Length: 314
Ligand code: TXD
Image (cartoon, rainbow, N blue to C red; front, side, top):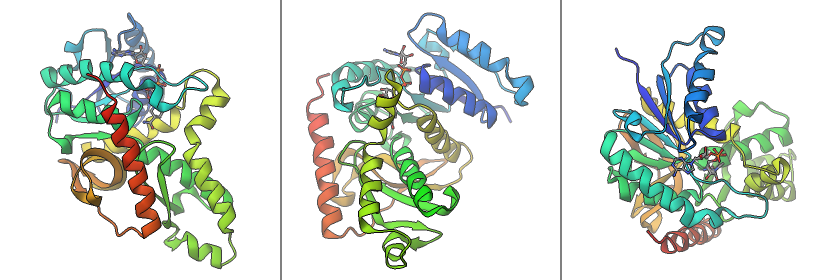
């Protein structure tokens, strides 16, 4: 069977890390695209020269011509500008919306059957623009944020409980912004919900609240430490997990920005919700029962996403 093809639109910090992880997991051939002259070709060559050492077989190419993404099975979009210290995710809105328009038109032209994962910020608005411009079915276009936000939440919880990160599950709903909704009630250590762990004396409500806030501020914490650029290792690992679930039909239950068509009382917006990702893309949107305070927080997050989308000028 021919190797799959993954096109990475944006070959910067996340794009290069995506390519490396895809190679190490031998998910398929990789085409890196960027507007930066010859940089994608340089990264592709450097990466594929690592293949004899790391033991993977794949063709890696870099291009400044969108035609290079022709026939891609998966497209991962990081094109645009990242945040600088003091900038909010929302400050990137119209610059990156313009980039998404060009990217969407190229996907429509060269690989309309692809599964598209958008990473570019402000994520919930960018994936919405991308799907509209590309004209692909909504179940084939998702945003990566929830896997990253829940990974951060899971890591902080594992640190607090001194248990393996693999035994911590976490639920994060809503937009990829300060209003994201980490759901304590549905997050667990080996199936034991966090509220029970408080009763068992493993932690306190105050500690959990500070972990929730640190999760919300996860991106800003990295940005302030790096001084230039934003997080890229965990975002790349998160998007690769989504791509792998699609390519291998794993049907992972992953929090993604998916287009809602009435679920949670929302229509026509992309919001972070639990989804099942398989060979058909978003195969299911899981609609959980929210308590009144959780619903209020979710609705606030949806309102923040809507105001971002309303502010997009294409
Ligand atoms: O969870 C999430 N979704 C977020 C997303 C997590 C972290 C970072 N988040 C966002 O991803 C970030 O705010 C940016 O919007 C993207 C990409 O972040 P990255 O750190 O990879 O940014 P870089 O290193 O600046 O890479 C962006 C590349 C860069 O090489 C530019 O030359 C290229 O995008 N670029 C373009 N490529 C194609 N077409 C156009 N128009 C273009 N403009 C810039």
